[in-house]
Amino acid sequence: MPYYYEDRGRGSRQKKIKVTIGLMHGDADLYGRFGAFPNPAVTLCPPPKAGRRIETCIINNPGVGIYDFAICGHTDFHGVLMKIAATVSKR
Image (cartoon, rainbow, N blue to C red):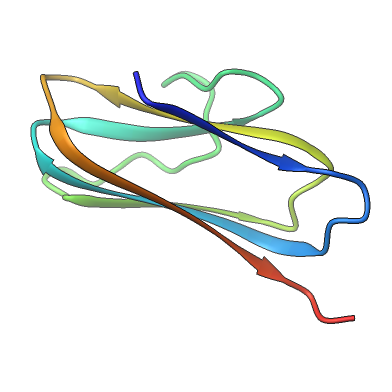
């Protein structure tokens, strides 16, 4: 299971974390969680709409700590692109 984390340290100016996956072949979903490994039962990411090839998870005003993200396949999958972007507040 592909896995990634975003570490938000003290003094971070991030206003938003946006995680997107693009899926070429198969069936997989994006899961996110604060401070623990994500799973389908406990996730910050909304459930995907059937048939979608792109999934997005947005976390507004993230707190200090580690956000974990994982891609879990319901069938075999490949050709996944994962992009993580942060919106930073101006000082």
